[in-house]
Figure 1 (cartoon, rainbow, N blue to C red):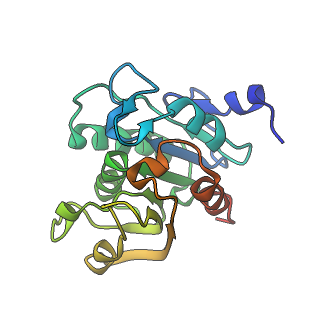
Figure 2: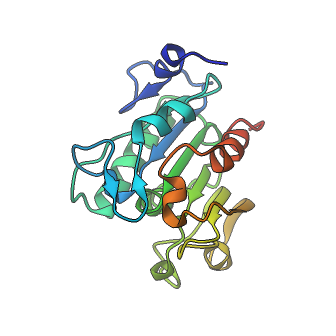
Amino acid sequence: MLNPTTQAQQIYPHLPEKITPIQHYVFYSHGKIVEGNNAKPYHPDWGMYNFPAIKAQLADPNYTLIATHRAKNIKVKDAAEQLANSVNQLLRRGVKAKNISLVGFSRGGAITILAAQLLQSPQLNLALLASCLPWMKNNDSYRLIGAVFSIYETSDTVGSCQFLLKQSTEVSIFKELAITTNRSHGAFYSPNPVWLTPLKQWLKRPL
């Protein structure tokens, strides 16, 4: 069991200065409600989004976690370009695409999908948490690419990513997990083991 200090050393708000080419880098993109200055915003139906706790529990010695707190009202396209730029910096510094994972929840998932489309690297890993929104259907900007792991909550209006899989041609692996917490979109507002444990297992699989 890692202590909090050890885990905290694994978390960066932006790319660390020192890049190790053989290391696995994981980017976590939070939901829209966290955009701004409050890392623990409260939703009237789904409760508190505990961004610090999610980062702390997602951190792992098997990879370097990068979790940026986005500015308020940032456009999805702009955030996706920033994420893609960070990934490109890793690629230029010798990190292989297969050793880079993009994890996104809700709007963060939309940013993740769009960033992957900008990067056009089938070796990337994408983990999507309640991210496949209905308006993405038949939208050429939103197609899956690489190895994809989707997790969605059965009581949520944002469901399966199967429709995105059907409109995508560069998916090497697709895995999907349905969870049931009866917390709707708020299922991903805290580091619940029901989604966090399988996500971390997927991130730590042999690449």
